[in-house]
Length: 153
Image (tube, rainbow, N blue to C red; front, top):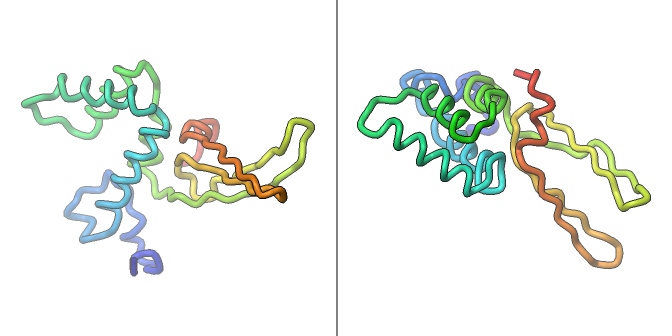
């Protein structure tokens, strides 16, 4: 994982960058695998809807030569959702996954946790809360929680 401490701008190129320009950057493999988990199964679409969208894309483009935009438009069309905010940040930006906790407050109904998406990448997250009585609670949030912040690059 030497790439993590490499200050080279090559490591921060958008995933849509042609492969011959990546020159072995981690972006080529790690970001595409991460994108799959951000959109499914516990991500933006869920496993069933992602499967339907993927099969819709394959049915439309079987035997043809799709480009990435064909995938984006097919998924948008099959799901009936405008996911351009997601595609833009995962494929066209230099955003990265860096989530943090800004605040934890006790409320009348339990606790309120405020997350900060420092890197700007829409990613699913699990907040694991451990209480003084020894119990643990896990709250899952899909990538959709970051849609409201879609003005970020």
